[in-house]
Length: 297
Image 1 (cartoon, rainbow, N blue to C red):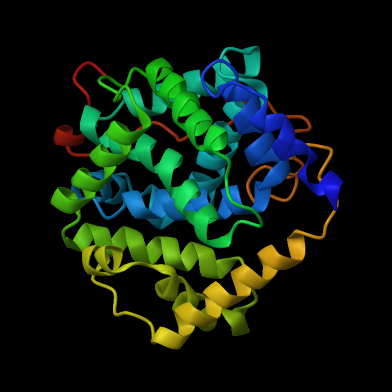
Image 2 (image 1 turned 180 degrees about the vertical axis):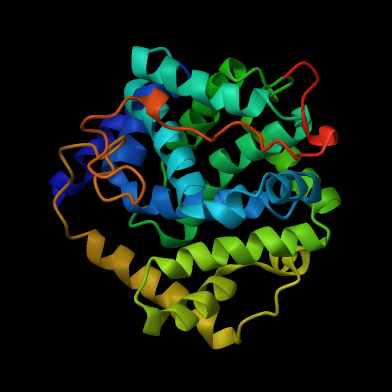
């Protein structure tokens, strides 16, 4: 049992500012890889509750035509940056792809800042409920400092200077920007459909119901979704907590799975045979309204 907590002891001995990348790699790639993946899926889902974000996504048509590719591109590019470091050759290449895609569109700095905040705090909230152990304070702070550096390299301005200030920004942004629009619902439905498509056909109605059961009240209102029966959320939470209890008895992972996604649906066998530059969204459609395009893009 002692070996199960070896990596936690290592994390506790590191500095969350100086060693934020190493701590984040241990936490996301060794200690909680499955949980980080699920939490970041829901983090992206959460951003679609902001009308300015969903309006752009709906206008590009990417979520209607290629939702799986959109998901795989985002997940793999962010994993490349984490696995190799934002200043490594592969990390810089992945950031270049991300920045090129974002640079084509008229996206406000505050929307970019909000999306960045979900990458920090949504996994922290998920793991507080469903992690096999509590996160160490160094893991929480390291996530903040890691994404602060990623955000700086993405050209995001005015990232708050402290963990608490960034968390307050996220809370305030959601309180003022989570309002229902038809594009929220449209992109939300496409995303629920994507999650359901990962399962056999006979399970898909249950998956759709289960996803709704995992959404909090502000998300349900912003998407215009009917809430699932209470027992659905309770059953899902019980299952995730039971999984966490079982994981405590597993031996510690010795090989990181960050940046390894051999079973993704768009790029079979990734990363073998692929570079980050092979990923990414296509150019904006020719009929995209000019309001969504960055001037000079």
